Length: 470
Ligand code: URP
Ligand code: ZN
Ligand code: ZN
Ligand code: ZN
View 1 (cartoon, helix red, strand yellow):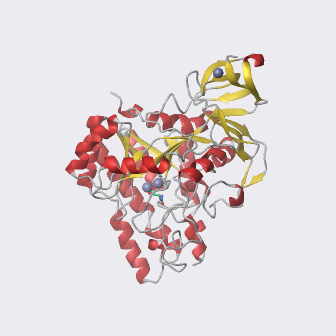
View 2 (cartoon, helix red, strand yellow):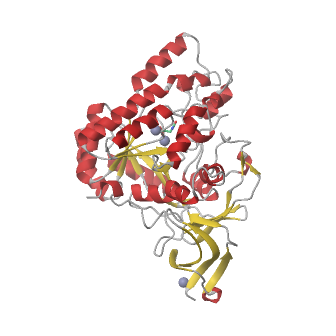
View 3 (cartoon, protein in one colour):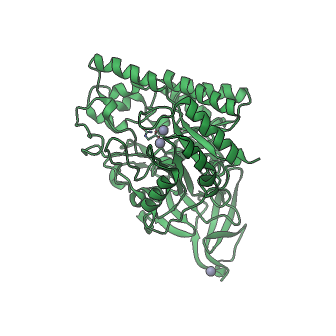
């Protein structure tokens, strides 16, 4: 037989097209796409019955089994994180390998390979977080890139992670010379610490004050500064998790100047607001503490517009959940702790695609093609995984999602496959959810069941990112 599997009667959506067809799969790859394929030529046939079929999601921003500097422990490792991803239609993840200060990049990378090995059920690559940009580390960069780690995350805030502007310039220069893209967490660290100090002096320590400490003004300033540093070195960067209208306006400005920058936003900036951190002093608001924090409805609208008009390049989860009821999670310092001591991060791997399909595509805010670009094609191109990942094309991996789009489903954490003890989207209704997810031609999610296997996910070395190819 020519095919291991045929997906028949698919409403195929790519970043540029939408058409009816049958998809033939052999040895984990798409081998033929045609108006009609002969079912007798396949070991197995799945009838999509005219439903939308998109490339499996590429989630280019998630934190799995990432040790922290304060002793907190994230809820998801590579088993539960990839399981949760697959059940929400994501078939490729790019989590972070974080360098501890004093550690070489090679040591950090080796450590994360051990964390993922034998556990991931879907394919993965790594970004490298650079927290120590000493000359020895800068000298390592060309070799790290040659080995398939072609994206670096740089923090402008967090004491244990941040680089000075001088060190950021050194990393950007090395990225430019050797062909990597740098992802920048842009918040003004001194604005945050100064506001935190003032709030605490006034006894304002509840989770909701996190949103005031991490002001949009601080995000705007750091965004502009990151853009300026990139302009100075003349290298493209990606601004991660952009949350506010003020920051988006800096991106519009940079585009107008012809500065080559890329940007990412996340579900929390569309579906949550600062009110989710609490309208009173309840500690439950800690569940939604992440940085930058969710903003107001004006910023939500600006984020929707920037998604629709092409300003944002990619849509990622920034999945980084901590259990709420856990002395190693959100309650690391007790259930009365000041907001600045609460571990930052929320869950999102499993709900990223259903939320954007429901509220974006089905509500006509973005097209289905734009959905595919934001969630699969553009991240695959940006990080050097295209066309193996992020497309429905002959030769690409058979990573596919068949969508149900006529549901009335209420999101509840009990139905999700993360290890986290809560979801920020509890009670939210969606019309869309993957009916089936294929990872290299294998069912990892179908009929409401997870079928993935720990260890079947493969490491993907990244090629040079599209934006920095000469
Ligand atoms: O609060 C967040 N976003 N935690 C994850 C780490 C990061 O900065 O992306
Ligand atoms: Zn075969
Ligand atoms: Zn960040
Ligand atoms: Zn993150």
